[in-house]
Image (tube, rainbow, N blue to C red; front, side, top):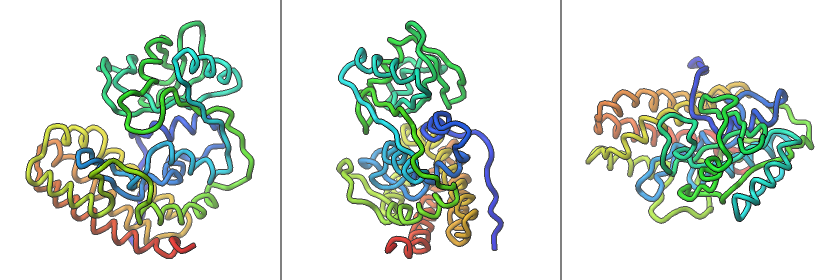
Length: 311
């Protein structure tokens, strides 16, 4: 049996790390929480333009709901019609504990270097306090105890260019209502993982493809012409988060004895991780070969977890 080699290091895990910050010392590791969100189990070629290494029809809001339920937690979800209303809700609830806020537009989070305009890249943070006209937060992008003026924060929070969710969204009042061990939560997540791999009936933008079909379409695109937009997304986010998710899911499933699925996930991680250099060098043919291999592994993983699809 191939040894499962976990990864320890940085990565763009904004919603998972924000949730862990809010849940506190009882929260499982990032590897387990990310796996519970369902994010490692699929791929979507969004509207034929954006490659996302997460399942067809999935988004972070759905993932957070799934992870919280599996871990035995409830929370309150809020959206608002205006910045003033949203800040009133945030000020009230942050007195009782951390608040998970997002999605925000990362390009408008002005405490991050180079962020000066809306980018459409989603982000989550944990708000710790609001003092006068200043937000105090843990930003999992590498900025603990960061601050931002309320007005600037609200511009990012409006999330006008984010493709899912609603404006001024937040989660408050995290309560544990069932005692569930992390390993039991992982076991209970397997039917969800199988369902995500098989695709879902949730609405998606026109032209969106999932799973192997999406990976084949992406391979055809980059082999023909690797555009600057796709190259930059792969380099700075897509390959990094996709590889991390697969590696973490391999480790998590190994913990509960799902070794065949774990080995396939680790092979997916190795395949994706090896594409970072070709992506930076603009080697479209190398990327295409890797994405087609990932599609083959997607089908094998779907088959490996198929017994849970019937559970």
